[in-house]
Amino acid sequence: MLHAALYGDEDQAVILTYAWDRLLIDPVPGPRGPDNFTGLQRLTPAVWAVPAEARPIPPAGSTLPRLATELPHTFALIDPRHGVEGITRQLEELVSHLSPESIDLLDVGGDILAQGDEPTLKSPLADAVTLAACCQVNAPIRLLVAGPGLDGELPPDAMRGMLGPLVHTFTAKDVEPVGSVLEWHPSEATGMLAATARGVRGTCEMRDAGLPVPLTDEGPTIHEVDLDEALSRNQLARAITTTATLDEAEAHSREICGYSEIDYERNKATWLKDQPPTTLDLEAVLTQLDQFEADARSRGVTHTTFRRITEELNLNGSLREDLRQLLISNRPEKYDAPLWRITAPAE
Image 1 (tube, rainbow, N blue to C red):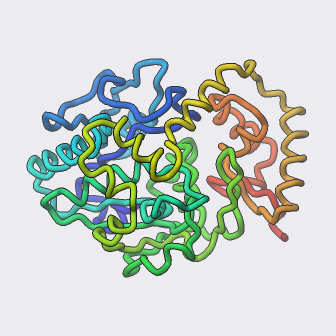
Image 2: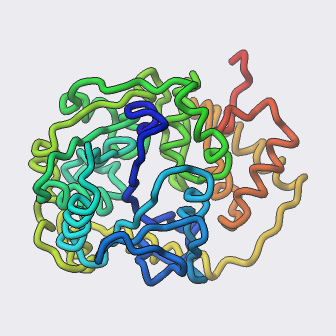
Image 3: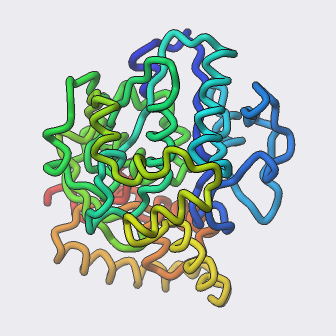
């Protein structure tokens, strides 16, 4: 969405991103590296592209091959296994290989601006290693924050003083090229970004923890942020600058933030393994959904994500897409694409 809005459809983008789809898609904790895929294409010695024909090696899962199938861009794999030094090397090689006209570091939600001790912060590691690497590359990189607060980790008020110039405000037209992708892709923050661009307003409950996220006029905005200011604020990013392994970066996260998000995934993956297999029973699903919606309305919630519903109903993450289809086919009036509306339209 950002690329089309700022540079036009004719421009060629290389999107360097993580294969880190969390347990809903990938039952293996942490990010995937090149050795977790077949069919990758080498762009540089340290950078691999993920084409449409690539496949994650079971039991790993990834949305990247399907994204490469449905979108025209080149998707390349951020590999954090070699710490910040490794990602810095990847960036430097790409800059040398591509001679890009511009480089944007995009964070949806703004938790890249966290200090590290915020009680609402859940996933600082992925942002911190990327930020630290970008600050070491000898090339101009612009930091952009889209949808301030939409990841549920930092409230918009906490970052408002850091947000620089408004770069763009997404509209429903901007969402059109990726609308079909958002029908299946599990990203909650991007889903809420698209929903706010389409005019949805209210409070959305997300993730297994049920974090309440305001859907406001700030939702579809993109702001520029000073890269060096972000680094000076982000304690974890500063601490891991010279790390050469992901384990080292994790150790710093435990020390500075009090936890590692991959530890959380490891613990949850162990718990999920012990859960009995579940199936979709329409009557049971709708009964549980009614109860969840009644409770959510009492909390002032107007919308939720299909990930949230899947976890609230104690269903296996692999059933999320089937659940989504089941609910939309039975109650189509509740679908505020790509979110699920809890309140009635008149409310």
